[in-house]
Every structure is written in C-alpha cells, then in structure tokens.
Length: 151
Image (cartoon, rainbow, N blue to C red):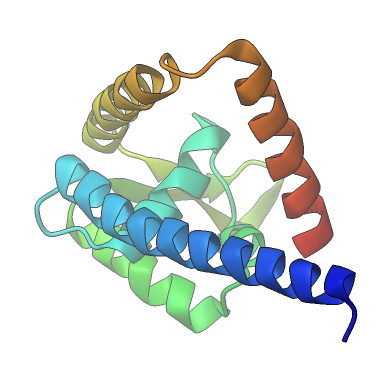
C-alpha cells in the first residue's frame, strides 16, 4: 500500500470520527432544543417543527415534510400527532386544494419555536465569534460541498 493511500485512509477515518462526534452532539442538542419548545417534545418533534416553521402562515403538507426529512409518512404522521396534542401545530385547509390539509404552527408553537431559535442562534454565534473569518468561510464552503455530495 502506498504512503499516499495510507495517509488518505487515516484522513478519512479522522473525518469519519469527527462527523460521528458531531452527529452525536447534534442529536443531543436537538433534544435539548426540543425541550425548550415544550418539555414533552422529543428530538424527532424538533426536526418536524423546524420543517413546518419555514412555511410561516401558509402551512406545509405532511408529505412534503416527510420528503424533506427523508422519513416515511407513518413516522411523520406519529410526530405530527404528538405536536398537535402538545398544541404546537394545527391542521388547516389548503386554499389550493379543498381536500388537502396543511400543517401550520399555532400561535403558541410559533412563539416557543422563535424563542428557542433566537436562543440557539445567540449560543451558536458566541461559539463562532471566536473563529476568524477565513476559517468560517472555509467551514461554510466545505459543509456546503459535503451536503451537496451527500444529497
């Protein structure tokens, strides 16, 4: 095995290890963030609500949420039921299709989600403010490349 191949394997292993650590921290952070929105919300609920929120007042179809998250409809349906029972989201009629229902944050859900998101952004900025602009630009560029390759 050539020296370059060995070095490449070591580098890939190091990246894999760091990505695994990042994913573990991300799951833990998602649960903490979910609990800030509602004490009974789980990490899956946080993923769902974060996909419903961007639709703002218009709402979003459950099937679109499932597709965005790469989950099956039954998994999303269970999560949606939990969020509904917690009073964080509601189903409303689709103005473009009278038979369809859209998901939308309730006033309480929007308020709690926005408060959590503001706090999360403040904490994230406090960490990244210690980074120099070149490193931040590199991180953003490389993460975008990784996400594109993973997609």
